[in-house]
Structures are given as structure tokens and as C-alpha cells.
Amino acid sequence: MRKAEFSFIFLLFTLISFSQNENLIEGFSVESMPVFEGRLEKFIEKHIQYPMSALKDSIEGRVFVSFWVDSLGNTSKHTLILGIREDLNQEALRVAKLIKFSKPAMQNGKPVKVKYTLPFDFNLSNIKGKTSCNKRSLKRSPGPGH
Picture 1: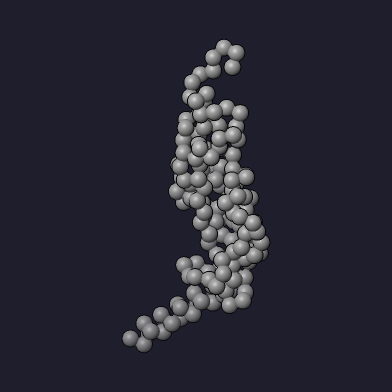
Picture 2: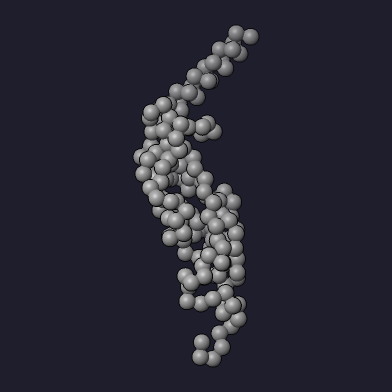
């Protein structure tokens, strides 16, 4: 019994030490999450480019991307969590890689690394006025003089 208790305590101590050395918090709540200067939704909306192939096919949906935010606010290890199709997935990943947080997550007054997941919405209604062609003209083949 003592050997099992010792092994458990040793394992717990090792995990805590690893977390402190790497400034890594996964699966735990932190005092404050990373802070993005401005509105993250506006940043995404400004930088996202609806892929023309998805426009032509009238594809909509939500892509989820996960990434790590380090103790400086930089993002890394971007991973697709839930996608729609390759062109939209790649666009969401591209924009996620542009994100830089102005302040990192904090725990006990120290910056820590945390995992962050964001949804990227692709809605055809949101692109109205952002493209020279409309949804109807994309569905039919161009006629003479178009």
C-alpha cells in the first residue's frame, strides 16, 4: 500500500513540477485568459477571405481552430478541431496564425501558456458588398458580355 501511495505522490509532484517549469496550464482554469487588443471578432472578420471555390459552391459553416498562446501572447501549434472542407479549413488556420495577444494568460501573477479554441464562421450573408459578384451570378455560368 505504501508503495502505491509513494508512486501516486511522486507522479503528482512530477506533473506539478513539469507544469511549473513549462508555464503550461491545460485543463485548469487560470486567473485571466489572454487579452486581445481590440475585438477579436472584428480582427477575424477583417482578415478572413472567403475562398472563391466555397463561394461558387455556396458553402457555409463554422470551423474550429485550437492553438497555444504562450507567455508572450504569441500563438503556435494551430490545429483544426472541426472543419467543413479543405479550402475553408485552410483559411481559418491562416487567419488564426495571424492572431497575437497583447497580454498572456496569468496564473498567480505570472504569465502562463494556455490552449485557446476559436470558431471561424463562414456565412454567405456576411460577404454582401465585399465582393464584386453576388451569389446568384456565381451559381450560373456567365453569359455573353459578362
